[in-house]
Structures are given as structure tokens and as C-alpha cells.
Length: 502
Ligand code: IMP
Image (cartoon, rainbow, N blue to C red):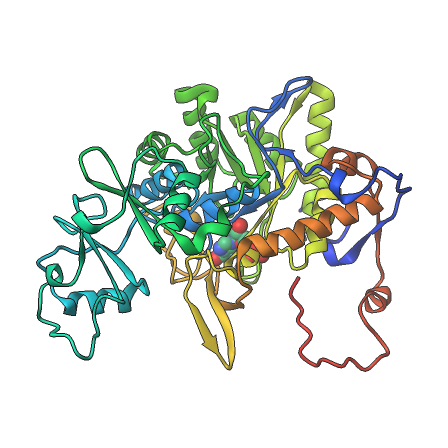
């Protein structure tokens, strides 16, 4: 006979936190959101941690190099999506590791012999108004000059004329040498009234551009997540098929941690993948596993050697796995059980394996609940897909700005490795949808609001750290009627367009 769980599967909206005593030192500025990312033994410090407990989902529509840079600068981590060829994923990882605040790698270059027609087309395509001209038109070719939208009048100039007739040639150009600091570059920008300062190496090859408009974005960010060489930390997704080729390429590119991306992690394929990485690289390569929703799956992946375990089957906003296949578990119930298993393992063996609650976090308070229930950090897709830095297009839908957001199991992503369990048959039905999410602006601004809310709730709970919250949180189930009591009720709202977004 089948095994039946006694409790129904529950989700975050069914719970609330009960305030604990808030001491005077319990103020948001004293709260630390630092949290372990990889397994460690009692008394040891984890080899990797996050400065705030947010990770972006392993998805085409969420985690590319731009997202990874923005999120690491705010203290969290992205796992660059793996539903792409190995080399392009490794290239994204490389871009994050090479990132230097304020120094932008140029991606719209032309040759001096190309025409103004090419310039107009380039500007239209990229939206950039500054085009570096290099000998071979590549981003790191020898710098020959710069052409900006102020150097020619598109409707008057002969668009067949060569760029060399209009560009500011190198001889008349102010440029910096590689190795210059950001503040020195900014001094040059101000002293010479420039909008853009190209940076070249000793051989005259273009390395970066520094823009005036970016100046105030490059203030030091105290939460920035960096490695021992002050490079941003980045993760990368892998699958349980091509890992023998993908893992070495990602390691070579500089990925700090990997994560097996699977909707069901309690499988022999996943066990073998993690085991192979640990047997080959030991602890020099870190890898998370998942997703699981109960104790046995958690223990299985820990035994394989997983550095962290991701929790969640079916809660994602774009996910239709439960509808399609009838598998899954309410995300709160899953986190509660796996956190219990994690704590039991720690008490038995002194080994702490962090857990990540993945998907289904609709409101900011759901993040605090997931943490209070025992998650060490959370992974989100929809939340991050709304920001400027996500890869999806921004477009106007019925009068509102939206960003595209599609599931890895959707036809669009065609991530066959993730949803096709064995065999070479490919994707026979979809487990995710292709959708829009309301556009929400810059990551940094939104993450600041979210973390401020998290810290504020933690103060209500008398917790100065996530470990305090794990130990001391008091959580209650809420009845359907009291959920109604929680929102604005029995009043007539002045704004009818009150958003349901966090
Ligand atoms: P969200 O934060 O609620 O949008 O959920 C994001 C999570 O959904 C991801 O981290 C994945 O675990 C999961 N996911 C991504 N794509 C799909 C899909 O196509 N079907 C089901 N789950 C998905």
C-alpha cells in the first residue's frame, strides 16, 4: 500500500511569524544576512558564504553574466544557466570573473573602412551612441579612434562615406592605460570633459571603456561578494548528461561553485554526477544538488557529496510540473522537513549541509518565512526576471512594461536534460510556461528593499543573524479567514491598481 503523509502539503502563505522579544540592539543595521553556501564541519568556517541569502535561478530568462554581476555586487549569487552550449556558458562565467566595476568591455566596435551606414545600423541595434573603432572591428583590436552620434548628422552626411572621415582619431583622443584605477579614470574624464575614456594596453589594444554616466554607480558596495582575488563570485548550473565535458570548462572559466539543475534530484543520475565531481576534484570544486522535498532525498544527495541541497518540486511561478505529472509538495512543508533532516544530520555527525528553498516565493515575507523554517538561502526566478539585468526582452504589454520570463521546461527553453529523464527521446510535453512579469527596474534598488524588509522582520523576531532566526523563530499556521484579515480590508482603496508584487 502507498505511504500517506499525515499532514497536507503547505505553502508559505499559510504561515506567519510571531514576534519574539526585540532587544534594543535588534536594529536593522546590526542584522547580518551572511549565510553558508557550502557544507562545513562543526566549529569550522564554511569555505564559501553569501553576504545575503538570495540566489538567482538557473534559467535562460534569469541568470546570464549581467545578472550574475549585478547580484554578486549586491552580495548574492547567480547560477549561470546551463541550457546552452558549454562554450557560451563558460564565456558568461569568464565575463563575470573579469568584471571590474566601472570598466566596461566594449561590444559595439567597427573598422575605420566601414561606412556611416554601418554606424547607424550598429547604433540602432545596440542603442549605444559611442562606437570604438579598432583595426579589425573586434572588441580588443588596436584602437584607431572613436565615433559618437555627435560626429555626424545622419540625414545630411553621405552614409556611404568611410568612418575614418568622421571619427576622432587616436592622435587626438584622450585614453587611459590598462592598470589605471577607476578614480584616476574618472579624474581624466572630469579634467578633459569627456563622456567616455577608452583604456588600452601597452600594445595599443582596446581593453575597456569608462563612461561618465556610470560614475556614481561605482561607489564601493560593502556587501559585494568577491573571491580571494577580489573578483566577483559566480555559480554555474550543470546537468547530469554532459558533465564530464561541461564541468572542466566551467572550472577553467573560474566558476566558484556549480549546481546540478534538475526538477527531480533524487535520482541515480544525479548521484553519479556529484560523485564523479567529488572523486575527480575533491573539495576544490564545490557542487550543489537538488531538487528534493523530503529527508531521504536530502540524505541521498549528502551521501553523494553535495555541498548544498536545493529544495522544491513544483512551486515555481512558471512551473506546471504538478499539473502535468502530479508530483511535488507544498514548498513550506518541503523546507520544514528538509531543514529538520539537515539539523538531525548536524546533531548526529557535526556536518552542516546548507539548504536552499527554490521557487514559489511570491512576496518578500515568504523569503523570511523560508529562512525562519530553516533555509540557509533562497533561489528565485520570477523575482529577478523583472529587473533590467535579466536577459529577457522588456516590452509594453497592454500599456504596461513587462519583461519576458519563461520556464526551463517550456518549449522555448528546450532544456531537455532537465526534464527528460533518460533516453534520447527529447521533450515530449512541457513542464513550464512562457510568460511576462511586470518590469521592476534595477536589481540593486529592489534587492535593497527586500533585504531591508527581511532585516526588519528579523528584528521583530529578535534575530540578529539567520542562525538566530533558525533557532528562535516562532511560526503559526493561519486559517483561511485570518489570511483575509492580513491584507487591507473593509476599506475602499484609493488606488485601484495596487500591485500584488513584493
Ligand atoms: P520562481 O522563483 O517561482 O519563478 O521559480 C523559479 C524556479 O522554478 C527555478 O529555480 C526552478 O527550480 C523552477 N523552474 C524553472 N523552470 C521551470 C519549468 O519550466 N518548470 C518547472 N519549474 C521550473
